[in-house]
Length: 633
Image (tube, rainbow, N blue to C red; front, side):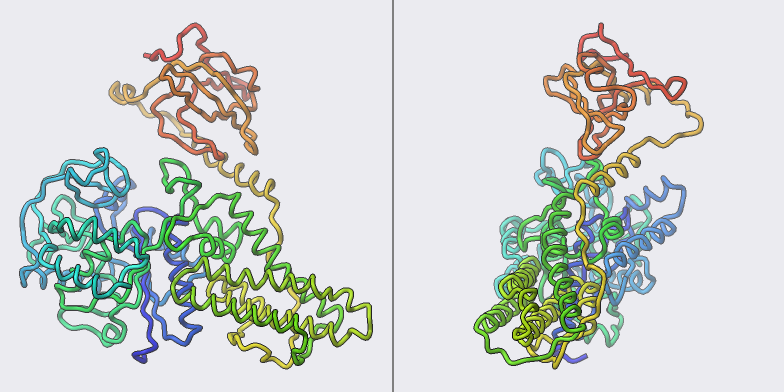
């Protein structure tokens, strides 16, 4: 692998506690786009992704399912791979932190750092977030909760080993100053300097003794090596690093050219990871790209909010390339992007169906109709044509600049601008009118050849973004050279992106969500103690408003007065038995402390009680003589 043409790129490894959603999947889609682009530009690329498989959360989830942690992570890793594959991503290695060679190398890394005094033994006492597997001081909490995920933290005290972050603080700050492009975007670097380095680093807890599912410390098997040394080290162990002797591949590939990560883990990758590397005497990665989040509407994705969207399910419904295009075109470089089904369908129809798909289908159809499928090369003499190809050259240059800077949304916009200009060229030249005049046959050929030349350029530019679409448009062509082909004979193909019917698609999605929300029928009911029943808060609530939920046949949206002074919204599956006017004004019993759930776009905060009667009938339990807000005992 030649020194000046290698490109080693990694994603953050996905935590194997749950199925990745589209926010997690953005990591691999972005990295895959960069890797494909670099290959087009002549680099020898090595892309590594993988799964982070140790920790307390996984140990607890495995126990709850009655399986071993290894069985749990085997299933989880397979699911992660399946999601990545559903998006047509092409990685060179999928590392698992349960791989034997990784675990052995991590043990040797830990021992090396301990023996040279960079790791020491002490006691940790403080706040701990189980989902994030992170310790925090009281001052770091936000409203008493985890500053990263917002969940509750627990008090924790245990013997632990610590990494001397403070020893390397000044050296790291100097590195930031001497390497201004180390962290992108710039705002992420400023955050690390102002929020962490300048206030002073506290030494980092790097082992745990309260659970067993992890890599054991070689010289103290009561401890397992904590996530940040275990997981972060994958970037070097996955290419053959071991303190006892590394492989040639490690020598060829390290330092990494780019780490692609989410903005929420920038601190770990730009403070903890560089310090680990400094302590090991290894060069730092050349650049860390901390990309923004994919929000659903205005919210971060969360199972508790019921707004999680899975990438493989989107790909199955709309196609992998459409999902890739949306993620890459709608995510700004520095700010969070937004996903809703409505915005996805609008982008699909406007950009893919109306602009790119329509350009290709019209041009191919006209070439076949007027010339039997082949347009011949010609010399450019028309001023309009010269302006057109000057615009194409400008779009291509903008595309390359944006791709080199990892501004994927701007790169997509450059391609789309060229497709829009090409469609405008059809309207300007009106091939259908030229076809009516035999004297204009040469001009008609020239117009169609120009369009096919532009489509070739668009197809090549799209290859890193939508590889399957690019293959359908231009086959294996990779050249961007204008006027290169003596002729074009495009293959006739089905419409690349048939328009989506917004109302129909949303109705299908709503029906699926409604079906998923139906409670599972359980054979037999387990007995519970009074302490379990005491956890359920039942209140009287008056129905002040009621309306159907669009595209949800079974659900009604109830607005309740539960005495709190704040209206409560509940989605209830009683539309088959009640009309809104039958319910307004009645008082019902609501389960007030049920976790919120999003049903067909409505956040439901509770559940009203009803009785299943004979002949598939349901009766809501009305208690109209009870004041709203009364507790039901």
